[in-house]
Image 1 (cartoon, rainbow, N blue to C red):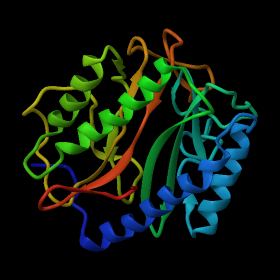
Image 2: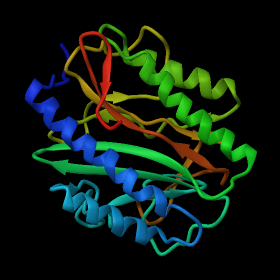
Image 3: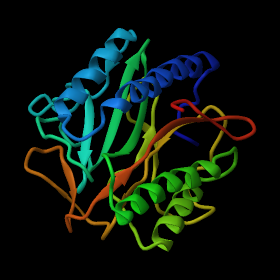
Image 4: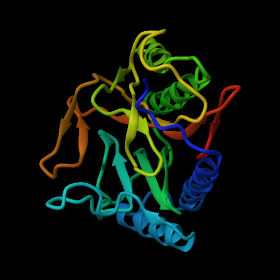
Length: 253
C-alpha cells in the first residue's frame, strides 16, 4: 500500500497558488541576474517579493537548529550543485547560477529551481544548461497515472548520460504538500517499469542535477553547500507537479 498521501482538490488549488508565487518570484529576479550583482542582493529581492505575496520563505531557517539554512534562496554558482548559500559573492560574466525557491503559503509548499546563464557563457556550459532543462522535460513527459517512478529516472538518465553528462544520485526530487519533503522520493536515474506506481493526486518535484563531468558530489564544511567532486559546473531545473487523471499539471510553471 502506498505511503504517499493523495492531495484533495482544495489542497491542489492551494498548492497551485503557492506555485504561482514561486514562478512569479523567478520573473521578478530575472532582470537582476547579471554580472555585478551579489547573491545576497538576489536573496533580498526574492524574500521581499515572497513576503509581499503573503507567503514565508520555505528555506530560511530550514534544517537543524544548530545549523539552519541562512537564506531565502539557494544560490548555486558554477560547480555548486545545490544548497548554495546566498553570500556576498558577485556574479561574473560566464557564470551559471541555479536559483532554488521555496515558499510556504496558506499551509502548503511550492518549490522550483531555474539555472540562469550570466551574460555570455561558453558553448560547453550552454550545452549543460540546455541538456538539464531538456532532462527535466523528459522526466515530466512520462508522468501519468500507472507510470512508475523508475520511468522518470530512466528518461532523465538516458538523455543526460547519452550526451556524456553525469547525473547526481545523492539528491532527489520529493513529495511535497503540507511538508516541504514528503514521500515519494523521485530519483533522477533508474530502470523503466520499476518503483512506485503513480496515481492522480500525487504531488512531487522533479529536479535533475546534471554535471558537466563526473556525477560524484562533495559536501563543504558549512554543512549545506554541495559541489561537484571534480569542480566542473553543474546545472539544475525543478518543477512541482500533480499527477492528474490524464497526465500531469505543473504547479510552478
